[in-house]
Amino acid sequence: MIQFDQVSYQYKSNSPYVLNDVNLSIDEGEWVSILGQNGSGKSTAAKLLNGLLRPVEGRVIIDDTEITDDTVYQVRRHVGMVFQNPENQFVGTTVLDDVAFGLENIGVPREEMIKRIDESLKQVDMLEYKNHEPTKLSGGQKQRIAIASVLAMRPEIIVFDEATSMLDPIGKKEIIETMRYLHEQYNLTIITITHDLNEAAYSDRVITLHNGSIWFQGTPRHLFQYGEKLEEVGLEPTLITKVYHSLKRESFAVKEEPLHFKELVDELWTLYLKT
Image 1 (cartoon, rainbow, N blue to C red):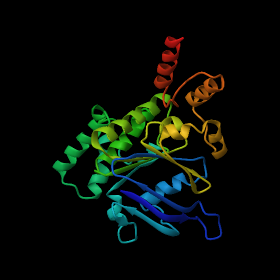
Image 2 (cartoon, one colour; image 1 turned 90 degrees about the vertical axis):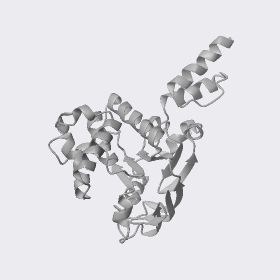
Image 3 (tube, rainbow, N blue to C red; image 1 turned 45 degrees about the vertical axis):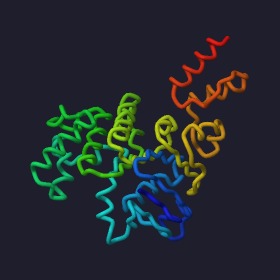
Image 4 (cartoon, one colour; image 1 turned 30 degrees about the horizontal axis):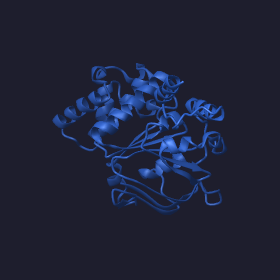
C-alpha cells in the first residue's frame, strides 16, 4: 500500500538531509507508528505520504502509483491526514458544515453527502453533535470531528500526524480508542506519527527514525525491550517499561515485556500467586 524507495529529503539545497535514503513498506490494513524525537524526520515522512512535500531523491509510491505532479491529486483521494491541531482544519460554523466541506469540493451529490456525513460522525461517536459549533467542543471531540471529515472522503489510508500531542489524557485515550476501532472494524491502513511510546504500543509495527534514517523496525514489544537505550534516540521509555526493567534487575521472573498496564498487573499477579 505504501512504499518509500530510497527516499531522501532536504528543505534547502545546502542544508542537511532530514531523511536520508529511507526504504520502507507498509501493507494494506497495517497500523504502523513512525516514532522519533523532534527533528528525526517523522513529520517530513508524513507530508511526503500525500504529496505535501516531494522527495529530493527516490520515490514515494501509494497503492502502486508514484506521487508526481500528474498523480498527486489522485493519490490524495487515497490518503487522509489528521493534524496536530484540529482547529486548523475547521472551516464551517457547525460540525455538519465542516464534514461537508471536503465532499462539496469533490462534487459528491447531496443525497450521498448526507449519508457520508452521518456515517462518518457515527463512526467516531459524534453524530449527536452534528449541529454544534466545533470550536466549543472538547479537545478530544474536536479531533474526532477532524477524523470524521477525513473518513467522509473514504480514504484507504489515514495518517495521524502528532494527532494526540495537544490533548489531555482523556482526549488522548478517546482518539487512541477511535484509531483502534477504525483499524479493527474497517481494516483501514493507519499511520501514526508520534514520539509517544504509550500510543505506539497499540500499533502492529513500529518504525523508529533517528537523524533521518531508520533506527528500528519491528513490533512495539520488541522495541520496548531496548529499555533505557531508547533515550539514546530521544525517546522516553514508558513507565511500564521502567518498572519491568527494574523488576528484572531485582531478579523477578517477569517473562515478557509488557505493553500495557493490564499486562504488567496480570504478570505481577501471576508471580504473587506462585510465591
